[in-house]
Image (cartoon, rainbow, N blue to C red; front, top):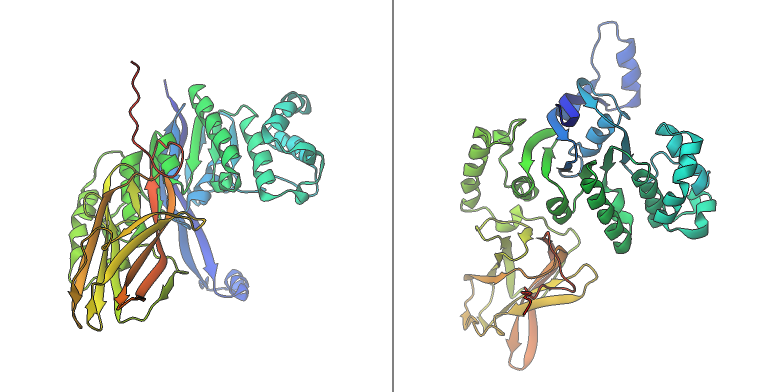
Length: 434
């Protein structure tokens, strides 16, 4: 018996790009069939299937083709080549406001969405109260949705999608606008769906959620299928793509879950990134709005975050050892320079940090023209989520505190975790019954 509810077979999506609107007309009227466009493959030969009751994650950078793929699966777009087979009723939450009429009230939009999904008015009337209860937007349900906040919009859209009893639920990044309590409620519903044998396709930039909820994951990069398989393995490849450490020339579309020769080539090629002259920070995701200041008598010229295997990355698994490296150059003689790291949450609250003075391991003298490299190594105990890293190079001139160079919020650290406790960090508690 075929257990596959979605089969995507050789999907390609081609867009014709014109430099000027007039070129489209010129091409259509050309007697010689001259082309005035360039071809862009939003998707290039995507092959995979989803089993009944499975939660499949889809990840990739912005513009990789994830949303295009979902629209083809749901029938919103037609592929240029290939075909899609879907068994069962799909409910999709692709983007905020999709399928809603801004002039209609929340109630009217519920019925509108139900009609588009093939439900009768009587059937939607039976589901109406469950949808209203789940959305929790109060009397706003009777107001035009154009008056809703983004959070209220997300609540109503997800409430409709989740309560029409679909066989397949497809959710794009739309949930990221909901508050933390609403997101927790949605994920609880995810688990209930899985336990009921429903199928979920989940697209998210939250890698911790993908790791926790997805049985398998598909990685798409620049329209090409990179890897389909065990979520942890796919996430590791994606981390390399994020910091430009994946050899794209060795990548071919993959339609199996096994290792390929191209993967081996890509892994082996990582040695190329250790060549002399290549800066660590060039392989990091840098905050374009970081703050760089100081006297520059000494300066931070390079830095990196490395995982337990020594790979440069912005993503660290909770519980694993990692290091923060910084390279400093002395433009003047500096006595007892202090190298520092600080990790903050996205609100700017300092969560943790240290420096070479606190660790009682300072450089006694940094001589002009010299370069020194310091590494801070520790185990990641922060909860899963996004954090900001700041680097500092300071010291004392007589009794005066001097800032030589500070890089505030220079990059992010994403902590990947499938299990979080309460607060900022995990105490690694062991529970026993005596």
